[in-house]
Length: 203
Image (tube, rainbow, N blue to C red; front, side, top):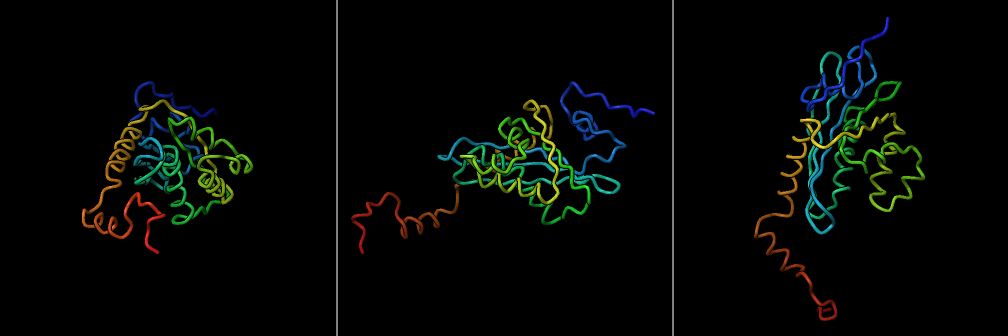
């Protein structure tokens, strides 16, 4: 008997059931272990940036949700986008461990064409030749060697409610970067003043 597929929702995805349907994951089929939805906020290496991602793990009887977030006082949006995937991967491979002999099926849902195209690459030479974020791409590829099976999906921006939530957290992370107590800034300026003419420094 053919298993009935869930129909893909046309409206914004707001539940785990409609998300699974959108990804083509059938309820009674054991073909997924986790879903991660990353978002980032920022521009280039002249500004602060933030990232956040939601990880949904399938447990024995239920699902478990975790939020990951962070930011850089100086960072790039593409770097932040990769961190939104790499941090949950580090959690899965180091904290949880990939115990299944068949590997760990992780669905990555993102509106970033840069991220999804890169995740589809399985050639280590491609990763090693990347001009930008090479180290992060190599780290993600290394996780695949430990049994992680990544299923990347490109989705329109704001298709998922979890995308919107992750973006709001990423914006909060970005807003909190680069600010610290005034007394620390005074000490920093005293010890290493900015824009000092090196030729005039005392020996």
